[in-house]
Image 1 (cartoon, one colour):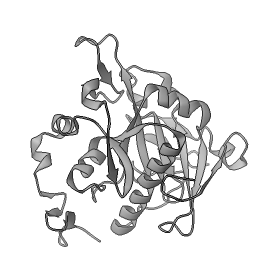
Image 2 (cartoon, helix red, strand yellow):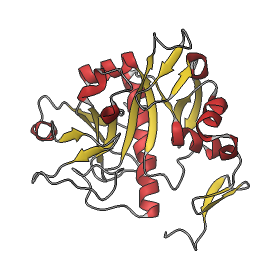
Image 3 (cartoon, helix red, strand yellow):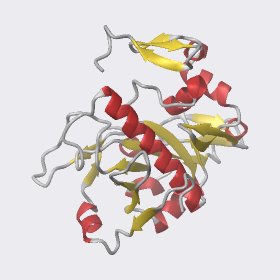
Length: 265
């Protein structure tokens, strides 16, 4: 039983024909963007935040918001059930800061896990498909956990594989980027330094102990020093700027409202 009170079914990709077909269909290249390949071998390039094995179009504004909300809800519920500690980061954490929701102009989400958690996921759940059927997803939908085979490389020099895993909506092709936080035992700043392959670094006291909260209506976790983390990545202005990317933040509604002249709904 999932944390959101909804049953899901897991298909192991070691036994399911569908998942065996998907195995190996990625090549990991071009920074953190995985090249998606159709059976013909041609790259499907229309948007870097859609998995081309599953997507053939970009979603509209409202449909994308709904799909991303379902994506993070199912991710958080599944990882809670698996006992894997995960927390919001980057633009997703910034969305939490404003109104506990995904920023409406985003087309993906970002989360982090520990190194031991990534080893666990790779060992037992890589390429597993989780089927969710909820009041928000009455038709049912499959979500796949895919671990980058290069996750074992801890070095930041591995620029082609900075994303360690993804949680993928196999209907829309949208996904969540999952990066691993690793202790850097040789960091010049000394003990307690954490780093990711995407270049982000911080002391462990900025991340741990994690704080409990809610995001998109689902229990979630965030870094202990969340404000300092956000200011370090986006600067202080990002925490107060109420007009951005064709949206205005309505304090009364606690919601980013699209400016009609700038956003196609």
